[in-house]
Image (cartoon, rainbow, N blue to C red; front, side, top):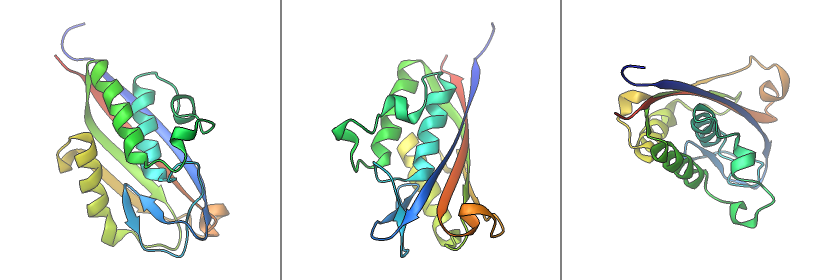
Length: 163
Protein backbone atom coordinates (compact mmCIF):
# COMPACT_ATOMS: atom_id res chain seq x y z
CA UNK A 1 0.00 0.00 0.00
CA UNK A 2 1.27 3.45 -0.87
CA UNK A 3 0.90 6.39 1.46
CA UNK A 4 -0.68 6.39 4.87
CA UNK A 5 -3.05 3.83 6.27
CA UNK A 6 -6.21 5.29 7.82
CA UNK A 7 -8.49 3.60 10.36
CA UNK A 8 -11.78 4.60 11.97
CA UNK A 9 -12.90 3.94 15.53
CA UNK A 10 -16.41 4.41 16.94
CA UNK A 11 -17.85 4.21 20.43
CA UNK A 12 -21.14 4.69 22.25
CA UNK A 13 -21.64 4.84 26.03
CA UNK A 14 -24.42 5.73 28.44
CA UNK A 15 -24.32 6.41 32.18
CA UNK A 16 -27.08 6.79 34.73
CA UNK A 17 -27.53 10.17 36.42
CA UNK A 18 -27.25 10.16 40.23
CA UNK A 19 -27.17 12.74 42.99
CA UNK A 20 -24.08 13.53 45.09
CA UNK A 21 -21.51 13.09 42.32
CA UNK A 22 -19.79 15.74 40.23
CA UNK A 23 -20.65 15.87 36.53
CA UNK A 24 -17.56 15.61 34.33
CA UNK A 25 -17.85 15.89 30.56
CA UNK A 26 -14.76 16.16 28.42
CA UNK A 27 -12.67 16.54 31.56
CA UNK A 28 -14.55 19.70 32.56
CA UNK A 29 -16.68 19.83 35.71
CA UNK A 30 -20.15 21.00 34.70
CA UNK A 31 -22.29 22.71 37.38
CA UNK A 32 -25.28 20.42 37.95
CA UNK A 33 -27.34 18.87 40.74
CA UNK A 34 -26.24 15.41 39.65
CA UNK A 35 -23.37 13.45 38.18
CA UNK A 36 -22.88 10.19 36.33
CA UNK A 37 -22.71 6.80 37.99
CA UNK A 38 -19.60 4.80 37.23
CA UNK A 39 -16.52 3.07 38.60
CA UNK A 40 -14.26 5.89 37.38
CA UNK A 41 -15.24 9.57 37.32
CA UNK A 42 -17.86 8.40 34.76
CA UNK A 43 -16.94 11.05 32.17
CA UNK A 44 -19.03 9.56 29.38
CA UNK A 45 -17.50 11.85 26.75
CA UNK A 46 -13.91 10.89 27.55
CA UNK A 47 -14.98 7.25 27.75
CA UNK A 48 -16.14 7.27 24.13
CA UNK A 49 -13.05 9.17 23.01
CA UNK A 50 -10.86 6.55 24.69
CA UNK A 51 -12.84 3.60 23.36
CA UNK A 52 -12.96 5.00 19.82
CA UNK A 53 -9.15 5.21 19.84
CA UNK A 54 -8.92 1.64 21.13
CA UNK A 55 -11.44 0.52 18.51
CA UNK A 56 -9.49 2.10 15.67
CA UNK A 57 -6.48 0.09 16.85
CA UNK A 58 -8.56 -3.11 17.21
CA UNK A 59 -7.55 -3.19 20.90
CA UNK A 60 -10.95 -4.00 22.39
CA UNK A 61 -13.27 -1.93 24.52
CA UNK A 62 -12.94 0.23 27.63
CA UNK A 63 -13.86 -2.56 30.05
CA UNK A 64 -11.32 -4.96 28.56
CA UNK A 65 -8.50 -2.44 28.80
CA UNK A 66 -9.48 -0.86 32.13
CA UNK A 67 -11.52 -3.48 34.06
CA UNK A 68 -13.71 -2.11 36.86
CA UNK A 69 -12.69 -4.96 39.17
CA UNK A 70 -9.15 -3.55 39.38
CA UNK A 71 -8.85 -1.09 42.28
CA UNK A 72 -6.50 1.28 40.44
CA UNK A 73 -9.40 2.36 38.23
CA UNK A 74 -11.76 3.22 41.10
CA UNK A 75 -12.65 6.93 40.79
CA UNK A 76 -9.82 7.45 38.26
CA UNK A 77 -10.08 10.56 36.13
CA UNK A 78 -10.99 9.48 32.62
CA UNK A 79 -8.31 11.79 31.22
CA UNK A 80 -5.74 9.22 32.44
CA UNK A 81 -7.52 6.46 30.52
CA UNK A 82 -7.48 8.55 27.34
CA UNK A 83 -3.76 9.18 27.79
CA UNK A 84 -3.14 5.42 28.12
CA UNK A 85 -5.10 4.80 24.90
CA UNK A 86 -3.13 7.59 23.23
CA UNK A 87 0.13 5.92 24.29
CA UNK A 88 -1.04 2.71 22.60
CA UNK A 89 -1.86 4.73 19.48
CA UNK A 90 1.64 6.20 19.33
CA UNK A 91 3.25 2.80 20.04
CA UNK A 92 1.36 1.38 17.03
CA UNK A 93 2.66 4.21 14.81
CA UNK A 94 -0.54 6.24 14.41
CA UNK A 95 -1.79 9.72 15.14
CA UNK A 96 -5.28 11.17 15.32
CA UNK A 97 -6.50 12.95 12.18
CA UNK A 98 -9.72 14.17 13.78
CA UNK A 99 -12.37 13.43 16.40
CA UNK A 100 -16.12 14.00 16.19
CA UNK A 101 -18.27 13.46 19.29
CA UNK A 102 -21.93 13.88 20.18
CA UNK A 103 -23.48 14.12 23.66
CA UNK A 104 -27.11 13.17 24.31
CA UNK A 105 -28.73 14.83 27.32
CA UNK A 106 -31.98 16.56 28.09
CA UNK A 107 -31.86 19.33 30.69
CA UNK A 108 -28.32 20.55 31.20
CA UNK A 109 -27.44 23.05 28.52
CA UNK A 110 -23.85 22.57 27.42
CA UNK A 111 -23.40 25.49 25.02
CA UNK A 112 -21.38 27.52 27.58
CA UNK A 113 -19.00 24.57 28.10
CA UNK A 114 -18.53 23.08 24.63
CA UNK A 115 -15.55 25.28 23.75
CA UNK A 116 -13.77 24.42 27.02
CA UNK A 117 -14.45 20.71 26.44
CA UNK A 118 -13.02 20.96 22.93
CA UNK A 119 -9.96 22.81 24.22
CA UNK A 120 -9.37 20.28 26.98
CA UNK A 121 -9.74 17.24 24.73
CA UNK A 122 -7.49 18.83 22.10
CA UNK A 123 -4.88 19.42 24.81
CA UNK A 124 -5.13 15.82 26.11
CA UNK A 125 -4.78 14.43 22.58
CA UNK A 126 -2.13 16.92 21.43
CA UNK A 127 -4.38 18.18 18.62
CA UNK A 128 -5.26 21.59 17.27
CA UNK A 129 -8.75 22.78 18.10
CA UNK A 130 -9.96 22.44 14.49
CA UNK A 131 -9.50 18.65 14.74
CA UNK A 132 -11.91 18.24 17.68
CA UNK A 133 -15.67 18.54 17.21
CA UNK A 134 -18.14 18.20 20.09
CA UNK A 135 -21.86 18.61 19.69
CA UNK A 136 -24.83 18.14 22.03
CA UNK A 137 -28.44 17.22 21.39
CA UNK A 138 -31.54 16.04 23.22
CA UNK A 139 -33.71 13.00 22.67
CA UNK A 140 -36.87 15.14 22.71
CA UNK A 141 -37.91 13.82 26.14
CA UNK A 142 -37.87 10.20 24.89
CA UNK A 143 -36.36 7.32 26.87
CA UNK A 144 -34.01 7.44 29.87
CA UNK A 145 -32.03 10.34 28.42
CA UNK A 146 -35.17 12.37 27.70
CA UNK A 147 -36.44 11.60 31.21
CA UNK A 148 -33.20 12.98 32.72
CA UNK A 149 -32.13 9.57 34.00
CA UNK A 150 -29.00 9.23 31.84
CA UNK A 151 -26.47 10.94 29.59
CA UNK A 152 -25.01 9.22 26.54
CA UNK A 153 -22.22 10.02 24.13
CA UNK A 154 -20.71 8.67 20.96
CA UNK A 155 -17.49 9.43 19.16
CA UNK A 156 -15.81 8.69 15.87
CA UNK A 157 -12.05 9.03 15.53
CA UNK A 158 -10.01 8.88 12.34
CA UNK A 159 -6.42 7.81 12.85
CA UNK A 160 -3.62 7.86 10.32
CA UNK A 161 -0.34 6.05 10.09
CA UNK A 162 2.72 8.14 10.90
CA UNK A 163 5.14 7.95 7.97
